Length: 231
Image (spheres, rainbow, N blue to C red):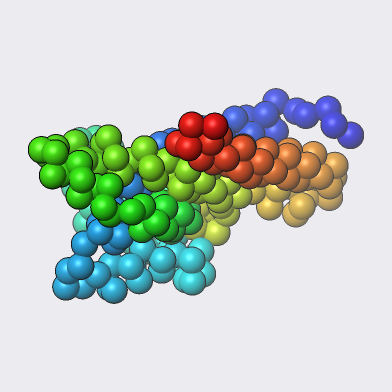
């Protein structure tokens, strides 16, 4: 029952690879966007906030199709990247990482933004008064104080990327060894007469990975809080 086949291991490792890449690439952008939304008022802020959270309310298939239209080989961005840099997203594992990053981005940004908004701005102002440049205030005051929210956002986003299906299969299809993540593999297996056992194994692995990610998020966030308070 739990004798995982090489094909299943391939799907598991590909899922981890896609989720890790999606999270690492999204995190710097997520921190920047969270800080922008938390600390700045500007024209179009509501529209930006809505655009960031749009993948949460749109059907994942719609998000995947939008990515295909824009980042596919014939899309404006995809064609330019292919001609200019040789970067191709459609039907590649990198496209799966892009789709997972887009779908998990709202969940990654939200805790970061709340964490930054909760910081006492007097601390940042005190650092500025002592002569620290804005970038130094951000690196030495804002970022450390927001660390629990950043960690929580990263791991919740990672957990979301682990289970992404609709946008991924629409954008990069379901190619074994290239774009077939755990979710796509389960979808294929439940449509085959003898695939129930393999599908069950992957379901168990998927649940374990998600639970571990969420527990790690809580543990790391608590550790960061204790460290900030010198406990």
